Length: 296
Image (cartoon, rainbow, N blue to C red; front, side):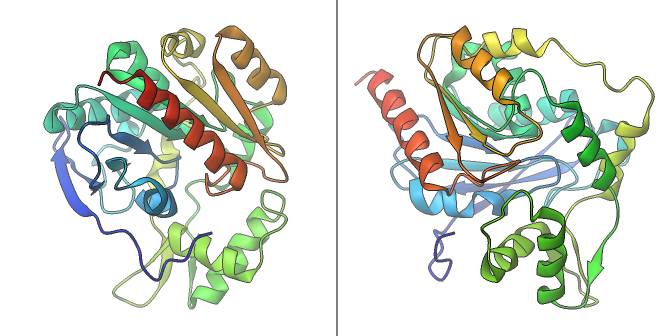
C-alpha cells in the first residue's frame, strides 16, 4: 500500500436520491479533456478503498469515488429493502445527471463492477472504458455464501490494533502476504471511530436484509449487461485465490469479446485492492487505450 502521509486532496460532494437519501462522493481533480474515472466500491466498502488509486491517477484523470447508500458518509436508507443493485443504479444515474457526465470510465470492485455492467445497459455510449475488479456475470456460490455469513454482523473494537487483528483473522486466506501494517491500513478503510470512542464497521448493518428474502437470487441477465460493455476498452482484474469470480468464468469473459484484457493477481483472493503491481499495470494499459480512443 502507498504512503498516506501526503494524500491527494479531494472535494466532498453530495447529491440526493429519488427517495430522499443524501449521498456522498469524493471528487479528485484531473484533466478535464479526459473522461473521468467513476469508481464504485464493493458491498461493505466506502471511498477510502480508492485512496491509493486516486493518489496514483488523480491529476492526470479526474477521479470520482461514489459511496453507496448506507456506506461511509452517505446517508442510511429508511427502507432496508432499497439496499439492492437496481436502487444503487438509480442513485448513480442521479449523480451522473447531477454532474453532467457525458462520458466516463467505470472502475468497479465486486458490487461496483456489477453496477458498472448495469450502467452499460442503461447507456453504453457513455462508457469510455471499464475495469471490472474480481466480478463477472456469474458469481461463485461458495463465495456468495461466505459473504452472506459475515455481512450485517455488528463488530466493534476498543483500539485500532484490535480491529486490525480482527480483519487479519477474517481475511488471512485472501491476503496471505499481508503484515500488521497492511491489516491496520485495511482496518482504517473498513471501520470508523464513533464519538463514543468505539471503532465500528462503517456501513449500515441492514444492507444484509435483502439477502434474507427468499428468492433474492433472481437477478437481471448479467451476461447481457456484460455484453453491453463491448465496443470500448475493457479489462478485468481477478484475484488468483478468488472465491467469487472463477478462472473459468473470467476466461469465458475474455474470450467473448476481442480486446478484453484479463489480468490475474497472484496470491490474492476477493478482491484485489488495485494497488498490486499487476493491477496497477492493467489499469495503466486500460487508461492508455481510453486515451487513444478519445478524440483530440
